[in-house]
Amino acid sequence: MLNLIIFGPPGSGKGTQSAKIVQKYDLLHLSTGELLREEMQKDTPLGREVSKYMDQGLLVPDDIVWRELYEYVTQHLDAPGFIFDGFPRTIVQAKALDHLLQEKESHICLVISVEVKEEELFSRLMGRGEDSGRSDDSAEIARRRLQIYKDQTFPLISYYKAQGKIVSIDGMAPVEEVFSRICNAVDGFLDKQKV
Ligand code: B4P
Image 1 (cartoon, rainbow, N blue to C red):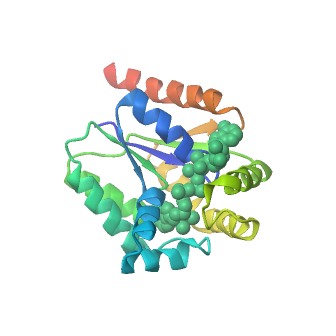
Image 2 (image 1 turned 180 degrees about the vertical axis):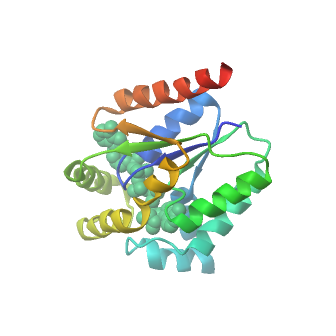
Image 3 (image 1 turned 45 degrees about the horizontal axis):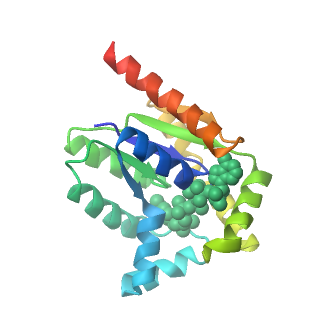
């Protein structure tokens, strides 16, 4: 199984790039943000609980996110591989994912870390906010999300560096250019597996 994580701050283009990666490498796209937004749209008790966090730009609690992810992964174990988009966002989530994949005799192959300067992130989130209708794309919430990324999610870089799995991609370029940089990294990984 080719299991990839696309990692980066809000607005770094994880969702944008994932849509292209799944087509090229025939993977399943698992975006926890999308799964959670679907729950919110269904307006279930769980969806209302999720929106309390997401609307404020806070991380949704690990146990809720984990239930969503676990259900999706275990229902799709015949997939050729996954791209995990927006997951993990905490060390607890990263450890749980490693454990689940080990149980399935699989593992994360590569963590694609997309790097974008803060001013650019902010301007992209504000641009997306003009037509996304997303409750977390306002200026105040975007700043909070960027701070939460620094405090709670960025430390995962060290976690995956220690496993030798991080590949850094300069995300300060047009979408196609960033995609081509990601493909070079994934193809390099796949070539090494053949030797
Ligand atoms: P996500 O849905 O993961 O969204 P994101 O981080 O804001 O955006 P992404 O990086 O995918 O950016 P995009 O491609 O849209 O998270 C939303 C919320 O869900 C979180 O805040 C949290 O509350 C909750 N959540 C999700 N997962 C969770 C977890 N594991 N644990 C706890 N809570 C969780 O790109 C942004 C914009 O930039 C777009 O408009 C795009 O068109 C543009 N863009 C992209 N690439 C560009 C480029 N190269 N140049 C110019 N513009 C570009």
